[in-house]
Length: 406
Image (cartoon, rainbow, N blue to C red; front, side):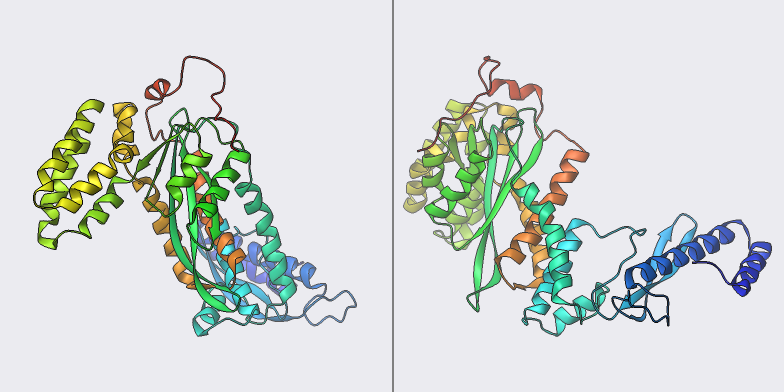
């Protein structure tokens, strides 16, 4: 878009009077604004006030946007359109998480399940409340291609000796009712000590069938070399692990186990019982760990027989970590590595509160995990020392595959 003569005169005057940084800021702001207006004209198919058969929509004012640069804040005006939405391509797009949040909110609005808070969120995200269904579909389709590719990518590029499984719960509409949906997430430690997000699934419950379907989907994508699965004592999870993840041991999360213990003892005894149980995990060798569990069960059995019984019944699952390198013990005794992930999922999903459907929930959670996975890959930091990983697999240089499932 060409500058008018009066605009050129004002620009020349600013060049003569502005100082260095202010001059750069003013130039950048003016150039960006002109480019934005030109792109809006191309998107709309007509200049302001122009009658054109190529017009696709009409301008509907502007919304303010502050762009922070090294030359200072640039105050820009983004054209709004009556139907659809417009955002200039030369400005940085939202991250995948924010794109997913945007798509979910818009989908909720279009499906008629919005509230005043959803309407406020739509406005805060810079979109007109009158966005069309086709525009929502386009936004969702563009994003879903990326997220589906991530969620279904092959996992056969390395082995994963340790995987973590956990579930969190979100609200979604199913058959016109608001219900609690289980979002299960799997992350893994690679054979060189790195971390990756492996997958996720949204479903009705945490039954054996549900967990088995999820684990089989990971196997079908190439997950191999699993030696230990760390998880809570979810209903059906242990059975699914032993049925699908042949050759892998199961480590029951020590943190969740303690919570189960607290439910059967008086509150005033919790600190003493917890400290006693923690001595099991502070032993220096595998044999000592298992012997200490027997000792603790006997000690607590006199006053808390239920706790003693719980310890003895869970002995193999609580001490599975002890068969692996000692340097890994603190990291593989619990699902704590998934706690931060679940907190971030809840932080994002709490914005929506009730999702219009499972697809919307899956879209947002996948975007959260995609961003987290990218951070782990882009800024690699060994979760476990690479040298200590060598003890997990035999000396055979070939890939250590799990036996096929039935």
